[in-house]
Length: 156
Image (cartoon, rainbow, N blue to C red; front, top):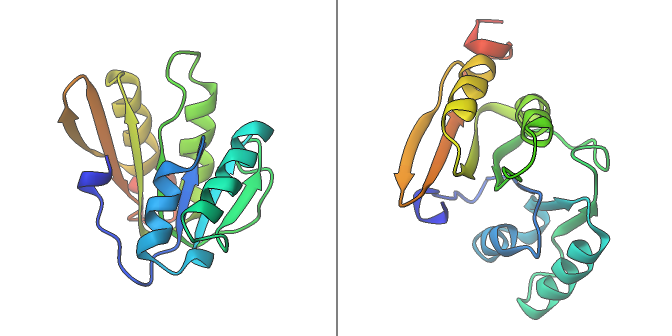
């Protein structure tokens, strides 16, 4: 997924469901670290991410214990990047997509990697009005751009 994403100096990036922080810490090495947010609902993951941020010289990243978006009110993200749990029901990715849309700036992009294509195609189409799909081995990387303030890409 990271091979497909380009970062610009003014990006505000959210690694949603950051795990141990690989994606967000990579972004923080390219951007000013305070412009990068790493969220996870697992206290152990957050502890490891904080340690990794220090080891990687970017301790200024925003590392937040959060169930979905509950731990932050931040908005205006230009990129939300996620590898949501796809081996369980779709409640988590549904929340990530619907609430993530609201946290993105206009023109911002949501990037998701998964092994399941049909459900994500349908959900991203219904919220963003569509998504580009990049096949990478057994995975699909979805890129959805926020082109409107209304779900489904309707003008508003």
